[in-house]
Image 1 (cartoon, rainbow, N blue to C red):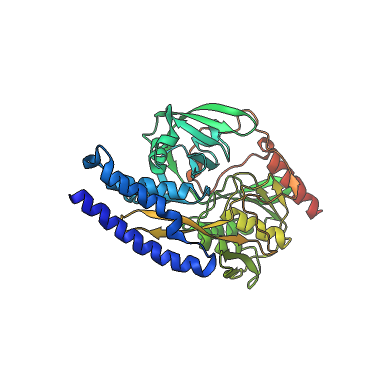
Image 2 (spheres, rainbow, N blue to C red):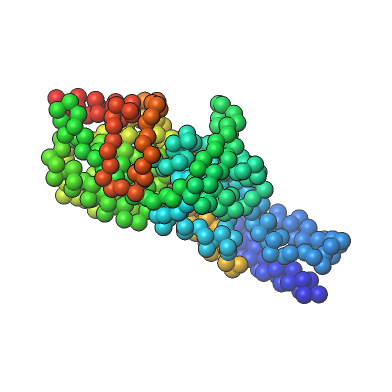
Length: 405
């Protein structure tokens, strides 16, 4: 009886919500939402009335499965649902320290798997050879499509020193298997080095992501470079999956003149928000920017802006192509929906969503033997880079030096 009352209560709420939605949709798309969703309510009614084991129905599970199905029907890999428990766990990665592989992933609703946005430089996932757009199909032989998003993410994490087996699908190659040892992942947002190259001092700055403190760490890295009297800057945005929009604007402001447009967001109703640079006091010197398929979201805001303004040529590979803006909507069950509510556009008006940004100079990365030392370099603000081990960096340096002569 209690379950029956609960289902009736849910139906009543749903009817209210969708009646309101019907009014909104009628004003825009002339769509009768309730009529379209009537089969859903009919199904719920028959389940409650006729299902043999109706006394054992878990209404919360039905609700969560319904929400996931609704989101999956959008076919948008960047829109997803988190349960109340998953919501509590979802901030772990952004705290800057956890035990895992060093992967930034998103849920691909179309294939019901994890899609790699990027591996973090120097982490176990990066060293193992995982790449942007790899689809993680199984984790320790367990199918990802049978897990929730956070279950799959949590299965990637674990105690340092333990091994996780991943089955991955890579377009153009097929199925691959990786055995990756988990480590304690500590993250520095920005890392830098001073490179002596062909008798010139060049500042090397790598932005790993755009979470909290990225702009202040970037300012420190730029100050270090200019204190060392560098003649040019290499800005490395490879394998940077993005982060906060505010951090993207603040970091872009360090390269773009105050008042200039950095990015524009546009919602489905055509409403636009224009974000402008707040300016900086750094001297103008030659710069080259490195990008690849792991450069996504905020990385593309920054690289798109500096390309449009001619501040820096882009060297490397086409970027990931994520120009979708997600808005968090809390739900009454304690969960939340991250819904794509807008796209962003570069200063010249380009929508690069699902397309990416083409570099000015295309250079495919060649991984040399013995490229990485077994050090916890992800936590260091000041690092040592080796241009002779990185053909994309070498190309960027050659281009930069050519412009200085």
